[in-house]
Image (tube, rainbow, N blue to C red):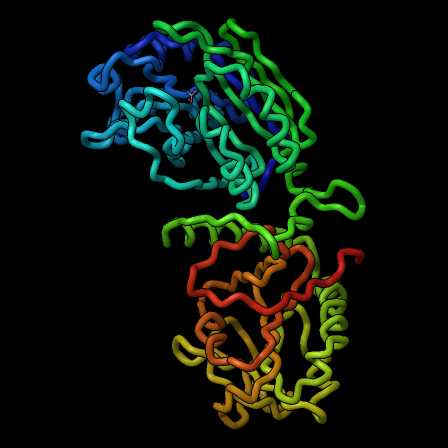
Length: 456
Ligand code: ACM
């Protein structure tokens, strides 16, 4: 998906009619008429139903299931008509359970759902705590994350979404306390992301909502601030790509400088989410890679190989497991050729689901394999895994503390456990270094990652 560099993003605040979905559709529809050419609009929490329910029964009466929802049908129809994406709160019913949810809607339909994790006050009487985790979504405006209202109190959520690559966090809200609007700039600044908080206005029973919806940029500056009681839609143009740059000074990067050797943030997510997010990350890295031609990649990659060559582990290694690089990988051919008389190089060959290891016995002994178009060794099969003292591992993305994302076949994940005595070293282009890679607990982290310098 190509990401647009100028995106018109809007925050809509209104005073819903409690319990009346049709009336709220009408109100929102009228407010849409005041906006032109928005790319994405964020609506408040529980925009379909209002907020301050007397009882679970009352909450139930204005809930809808995702598959049968007037409110979602309306948003999809408007998304098509206006060519606009929406993030909106909705009172969601699933069987007998209610969730305080938000939907992401595009002109193609429903793109995703997030269920509020941190329920505020009496919401705990009506709603189940969210069980969707913290998904990120691909949009033409970059990667989008969603949080709902009181979720804002938990810094881990903003951080996790930002580490996952979210460039914009949409934040449908029904805020009654006065604190959030002044906390948002801090979250936007420390995570270097855009945040759009759409907060409702009005009074329902004993609760008055604080309005003042905000849009904040990665410098923590307010781009938009709504009125404290007017119903309105405000829009501004942003460039979501700015959220890709976490650098603070020439020598400081908000993400790279984190001391993950002393602290880190744990994310529990299911296998499906992880698979989805690996796919998103792979696409993102492939897109970055496409900005370079083969010669440029080779020049950049040679810097990583020069660093590798200079390590104690390489100098001392007698048997090295390494890959024979493809044109879009950090190039290994020259290093192998240069040292082939002094060291033993072992290359992988794909056999079924596994890598068979074979000795490199010269370029003429390589042949085109069946998988990925890789040149594979035809030398003798090598099974003395424990004699391998250095393993040089390719990948699509790496973190500084050794987590790796491969192409998706899992070949290296299955091989690494056998290389007990090897220093497992990833080699990377600078654009392959990321803040976070989804990893399973059984994944073996690499001992180190060598990234080419950015100066090319
Ligand atoms: C809130 O979470 N609606 C305050």
